[in-house]
Image 1: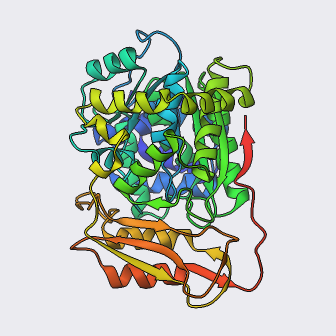
Image 2: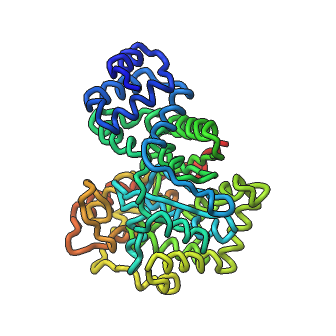
Image 3: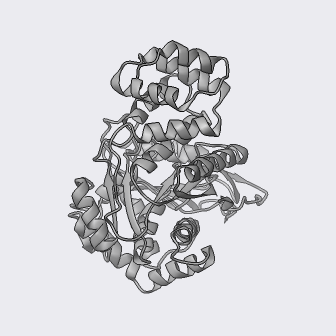
Length: 436
């Protein structure tokens, strides 16, 4: 049924609620081209200014989810789960929780996108493992999840194609930070990917999409509300991004840190967030009665070595060299290292997380454009955390530098991004809120 785009735009412009038929007509129109870009842009701006009700946001999410292929995972026995992060710096939780949760008997069927931003996405990190392929057709993807319990692949199916069109338009019309549009963008891809349980990690702070606790909470609450209305089981954690989550930033470096966590060699914030997200998945999937029991179960899978072994199984199933789980020396290594030293003593009072991420990008760890080629070996290893006492001359961070890295630019940006003061700072809680 064709509807006049102008009627839909006018209705939203005057702040009225769009019905399901109108929203479906809009989504169909942007996919088949019957809605011109300028009409779609006008409607996006009207949505941005006037907002959307939950009913409208759910209708938009479902229409976008159905705008392309949808994955039917019902022939894989058991509960299927997924996790989504709004993106941060040094955030390698997927590589830790996917094999650990699978080792606890909940299937992890994860489709990821490429990273645009500070470092590569999960796929780029995995591709730093020699031989590892993130391309599989859907039948092979499902078979791997059945056989070993987990898979992380690139989006092969045409999932939520409406989102690609809308995202490109939002990017150039200053409508990126509109809540209903963020929610429908994230959730449409998750719903199209066919999992029963989804846990969201909403970052808050200087290196996050949402820079204040209030905005992060609004986003988390709306995603859980709309996600639950769609008939799936959703939870969200709001986690701190006022410093990098892990100490390793960069593709191969982050794989190394994930392996160190799975091997039981590394404690810290990265492990805490990965295990808490994993425990919410286990609880929502009915595998444990509560989150504490979930964390204990995941800790046991680290202690027994089952999580690390399953990560090796997943690497092997996707053509990679499973020996990396025993020997991280097989990962790509940058040819040079440069240390950033403290020029005075005191406390690490502040970190500009997004600048630390951008310094890693200048080294070659992240993309400005989709076509950029990454150097998977480069990045930054943080030697300090917020609140640490430092003396003059202490190493604050180590830059892992490649042949094509902008070494000077990265060094200067990193130097500015770590602030040393006289007073020990008050630290925010790592997990700021849980939204059920």
